[in-house]
Every structure is written in structure tokens, then in C-alpha cells.
Amino acid sequence: MLFHSALRKDLSRSFGATVVVLSTIVMTNVLIRTLGQATVGGVNPSEIMLVMGFAVLGHLTTILTLSLFITIVSTLSRMYADSEMVIWFSSGRGLASFARPIFRFAWPIILVITVLALVVWPWSNRQAQDLSDRYEQRNDIERVAPGQFQESAGGKRVFFIDKDTPDNKTGTNVFISSTEGNVESITSARQGLIEVKNGERVLNLKAGQQVLHNLQTGDVRVIDFDRYEVVIDSDVKAFSVNAPSMTSTLDLIREPRPQHMGELAWRLGLGLAAVNLLLLALAVATANPRVGRSYHTALALLIFIVYYNMINVGQSWISTSRVSFSGFLLALHGSVFLLALAWIGARHFNLSWRSLFIRPFSKASAAS
Image 1 (cartoon, rainbow, N blue to C red):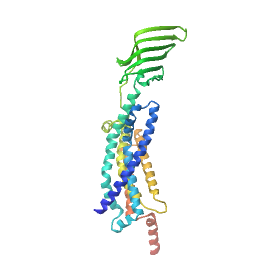
Image 2 (tube, rainbow, N blue to C red; image 1 turned 135 degrees about the vertical axis):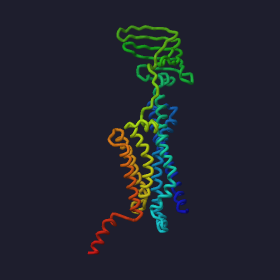
Image 3 (cartoon, rainbow, N blue to C red; image 1 turned 45 degrees about the vertical axis):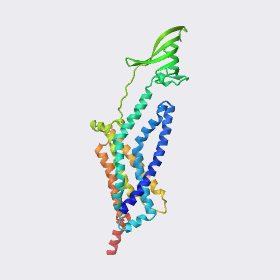
Image 4 (tube, rainbow, N blue to C red; image 1 turned 90 degrees about the vertical axis):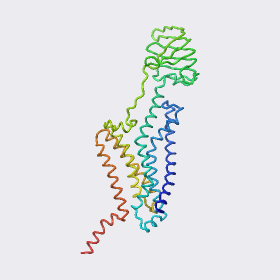
């Protein structure tokens, strides 16, 4: 049908352009934040693009939802401004008849949003956290850049090392300055090798010298050694995933704790919000030459921000057991759904507050 195909074609063009613009903005912000984390040692510089990719995947649900909402509002507002809606209304099409082609266009996007929220969101968060943990738990030798002096993780040692192997487990020309209690030690060696023994990372130094200085007595002792072991990490920690945002949806359902229910309400809320925002977009879109075309886009952004923040607030309330899981979903998403239907119905039948309140009074006065 011409009506359906023309509308879906306009929506497709506008949706593609909106997704590209919003994705570029989000990727730029994520890149700046990731570079900032890399400068302070929170992210491995060689994994910046990987970390950024996982972060963008996590934001993809919000990008698609907002893009779909803005696309419908802007497309229908343009049709109002260009008098296309007047033509369709004159041919017997009401505002409610636009819901079917819009849903036919949007249902694959809503399905993708739901899958991203339920499956991809926890997976991307878990992958990003694994990268961060692995880089944070790197040993002291791996923290040091070749030819630079740098403090260890605990701040008790200062390292200088030349790396000459790809795995960063063997170094040459090792220099270590450390202070333990009242004893200051300076150790130098030609070669160092990283090993793990009994859950501890140990640095085996070969062909070196150690100078021990007692800060209280002032005694100095020099020791030459062929082999010397230095404990780098006393405990090699294993990775663990405990945050609800990194827990799979099935695990959230299996362990219905308040924190898990709050996270589950947030994920399901993204899919429900996409449907409700679609209906709200159909109700919001209109044309008013006095306010300009950007008015409805700004109104759409305001509605999205308020709705999205309410989903986040609901997650916090459910996590602290202030409201129930089903009660919040029904109260927020159900009320928005009914509001959108009422708004569409009022515009479909051309109802207004003036017609609801003034006409009954005018009829009553005419009868008297």
C-alpha cells in the first residue's frame, strides 16, 4: 500500500541518519573518557579501542531507543509542516491509522533493543571489567615503561627496567629501590624473570648487587648475588563478577535479590520504554509555525530524559526494597502506556480541553 510504503521509507531514511549522528556523539564522548582513564593508568593504552567498543555496545540500547523516538517525531512533524498529513487525513486516514505502519517499521528495532538490554549489556560490561581487572592486576614489572622510573602499585618500590621480551616476563638492567621499615634497599641486576610460586608473583634476579641502608643506625651493607628472589605480589587475585550490571539475565531471575530485581527492571524497562515512546512520538508530533520545527525535537528530548531517569530511579528504589518489582513496572510503564493511548485518542477524534468543558456549558445555556 502506498500509505504504508511511503511512511516506512521516510522513517528508514531519518532513522539511519539519526543513528549515525547519535553514535558519533556517543563514540566521541566514550573515546575522551577512555583516553582519560588510560592517562591515569585505569585502561591499557593498547586496548583503548576494545574498551571503547564494549562501552559503545553498552550504550547502544539508549542510542537506538532515542533514535527511534526522534525519528518518528521529526518525520511526522515534517509531514505536518509540508501538509502531507492534511492529505492523508482528507483521504480518510486518522492519526490512529499511523500506528500500524510505524509498528511494522519499528518492531525489529524494538526486538534488537530488548536483546541488547537482556543479553549484550551484561556481556559487554563483563568484558570491559575483565580488561580493567586484568590491567589493574598486572605485576610491578609490567607497570614500568622501558627507560622510565616508576612506582609500584603499593608505592613501596621504585623500578627501572629494560624490557626485551614480548611477554613482558623477562627484563634486563633491573633497578629496584624499596623501603621496608627502617631499611632502605637498592637492588640492581642484569636480568630479571617473573614466576608464580604458591599464589605469589616472584621476581628472580640474576647477577646483581644489593645495598642495604639502616636509616636508624646508618649502617650500610653491600651484598653481591648470583640469584635473588623478590616477592612482587603476595596474592594473585582471581577475577570475580559480582555486580548486577555484569550478571546475566538468567542469573538475575534465578537469584531474585533486590539488587538483581532492580537491574532486571531496568533491562526490561528499556524494551517497554521503546514501545511507549513510539506511541508518545505519534501523539507529540505536530506542526506549529509559531514555535518552529525544533520545538518538537526539544520536547521529545525532554520526554525521553524524564522517562529514562524515572527508569533509573525505579532501579534504585527496587534495589533498596522501597517498591516492588511488578508494582513499579505496572505503575511507570503502564501509566505511560495509558497516557499515550489517551493522548492519541484525543488527537484522533480532535478533542481538546476546550471542547470537553466549554461545549457542555454552552449546550446547557442554549437549552435554558
